[in-house]
Amino acid sequence: MTTASITPRTPVRGTPRTFTDVVRERTDALAERDAFVFLPDDGQGSVPEHLTYAGLDRRARGTASWLREHGAVGRPVLLLHPPGTAFVAAFVGCLYAGSVAVPAPLPTDQGQQLARVAGILRDSGASAVLSTGAYVPLLEAWLESVALPRVRCLATDREDIGDPASWRAPDTSPDDLAFLQYTSGSTSEPKGVMVTHANLLANEAAIGRWAGTHEGMVVGGWLPHYHDLGLIGHLLHSLYVGGLSVQMSPLSFLKRPRRWLEMIGDYRVEGSGAPDFAYDLCLRRVTDEQLARLDLSSWRCAPNGAEPVRADTLRAFVERFAPAGLRREVFAPCYGLAETTLLVTGADPATEPTIRTVDAAALEQGVLAVGEGRTLAGSGSARDCEVRIVAPGTDAPLADGLVGEIWVRGPSVTAGYFGNEAATADCFGADGWLRTGDLGVLDAGELFVTGRLKEVIVLAGRNLYPHDIERAAQSADPSLTRGAGAAFAVRSDRAAGATTSTEHNDSTASGGRGGSEREHLVLVQEVRLAAVRDGDLRAVATAAQSVIGREFAVPAGNVVLVKPGTVRRTTSGKVRRTTMRDLFLDGSLTPLYEVLEPAVRDLLGDSTDTTALSADAPDATDATDATDPGVSS
Image (cartoon, rainbow, N blue to C red; front, side, top):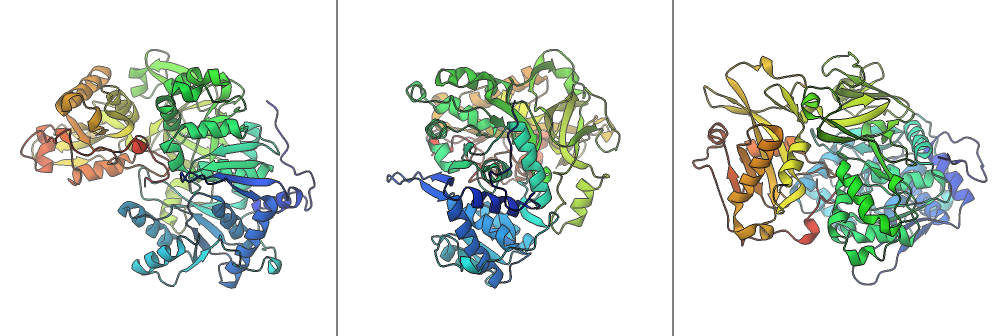
């Protein structure tokens, strides 16, 4: 694989020390080229939005001048934009001002989303909010309602927001913060990861070497601009190499998955990535007639990350879309997280992904061994960093082939959590090593990610991974939505009948918990009522129980079927299993049908073991038949 140069054709300031320097060099060298194209989807024949490098520079200078005038230099600034080019101009405007950009989802009337963004605003102490003219009045009213009326709002799509000619370059150093990336909160409350300019430059260089990106390259996607893969991989990396980024909204993709694939052909996109569910959604929703019109021959790097990578998805996608010119080696499974800026490991895009069939029983005991029962997709080797596997709860490295917590060290590891010294010390305090909280195993230098440490379900001394249980259950009936279930464990006191959540499972065994306690597996699963045969929810729940019992040899006595949209997800589409466990234990879920063991039912105060609603109840629309990383909280 050829590694492309990331140096502009006409370098004007020497080696860039900050990402701001990179953007200024690109705008000088590539002024009249398109930097970004956004494809709207309003059903009214709207034309694509174009933003040239010169236009980006001019709008960013105006925004930066306004931020300087309003005392935002060196301070966090919240970016609340709908999908489109205005966000990019606002983000670069923060760089030009020496402010700290804080990308976040645009608040909606959804209670969780409003609460999340209000929390980000308060945690970051943002001095200003940037958005578009259509949303600023709504945001000002919202700020008033959350008792933050003094935070100024600016519509960055206006032409008169500041004087570009009065702009002057900020005095920014490599160790200064470029932006705060708020974590998605799959197992905890969101925290603001402090990404410095040095972190960002190091990770963008690693991405470039891994994916072989080059000046003029076209990247494209639909992931939210406030998520690390969408922001760093699809938007900022294009600026870094002097390429073109073509974007559409997450909702546009979810409504019509084919539009993503059509965009790749129409704009000759070379690089475009997504979580595993997106490839699966294309498999289920793109028709043969639509497939016949696709051209995917330009696509040479398709990162698959942000959630467990399924080997069957990789195989099925390549087989399904090969007639459209898709190459077998296009998939590049990868692993990364906000705390490492983005990329940690990645499979070589020039070769087919590594697939291992392993002994499921051995894996449950923390050992990677050849056998049957589970298939793993490798996430490639380390890129510009060190990776080690450590016994959970210790500092002891493990040998290859043993499952433990993934630790990472290198220049992309960020500076910690903004204003949260305790959490920073907990995760970043191991002699330069980041404790990721993820479980994995190394084999011949390749990383295989197996799950989240806090989410491992320990039953009878066996470590079971919730996504495996969820996937098996969802295969039991067509009405069970793929990727829309949450498996977790609760613990009951056999004598007293008290049941509690298992917040953090030791990944070795549960033998030290005493004979009076028992772990209970619970599955909360979304069901599409319109697809339930004869409206028989009992049969659906029984089928799920049977599959779990057969494949994992564990009792599956607790199945809760819920309507679409109930299972909470992060901004990247990860299931928030800890949140779902809390909602279950709090009695906050409204089941369509449930079957519970007596010990679990006693905790919830139920008097019956099942609750059912008619299959005539309202169902979700087709557009919500998938994880929505742009809408879910």
